[in-house]
Length: 75
Image 1 (tube, rainbow, N blue to C red):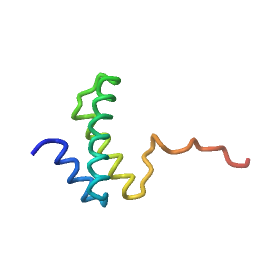
Image 2 (cartoon, one colour):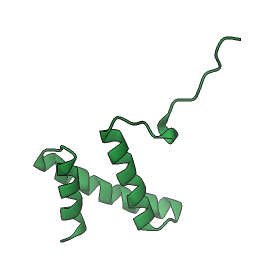
Image 3 (spheres, one colour):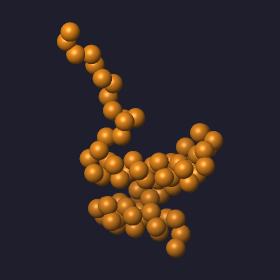
């Protein structure tokens, strides 16, 4: 089983319709390649990072790097 098939299955298990699951899988592969090159990071690490983001997003969590900056409260 190739990477696209595995990722498509994962996206489908997370609730995406079949066509959407394949589109998401293709985008994950494309973005993993881009980030891997930009960050000089192993592609496996980059894909793991992206998959964590997908799973966190699906469960409604906002990863720390996407949190808005904290504004100081009233003194």
